[in-house]
Image (tube, rainbow, N blue to C red; front, side, top):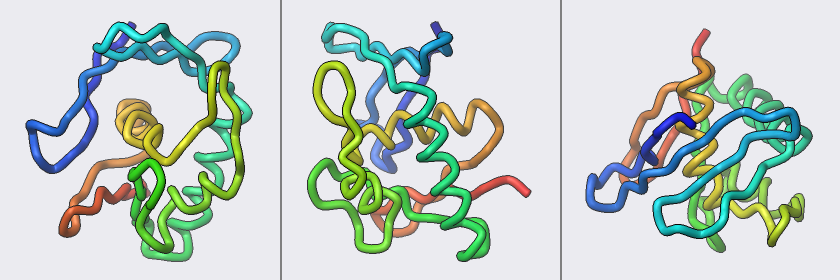
Amino acid sequence: MIAETTWNKKEEKRTNFKWRATPEGIELEHENDNPPYTIPWTIFHSILRHAMKMASENDNVITAGTHQSDPSPGSLGVWVLSQNFTLVPGALTPRHLSFIGPILGRMGFIKCQHKGNSIQWAFNQ
């Protein structure tokens, strides 16, 4: 598994996690010993496609909106909430973007920026 850290501006609020690509999707394992879970490729690709569409309309930069229940207005997190994506177990929330962002960064799609307290994804051109 690949070791990664979330992109929170404040170091003490960052979370360590591990991930790997599987035939089913992106498998995530958190440091809190919760069981691993998988974000299916269909959901992962939907998020990436929508983020790229948003970025194309905003100078290749979007606000991630990673607050679990109250993401920043106009952010990718607002869209994620509206999609009602399900995972086993549970549901995919904007909080999962905290993990998806660094994974997309590792894959070479984006870089992290901060604007105030917001995490922004800057798409590579």
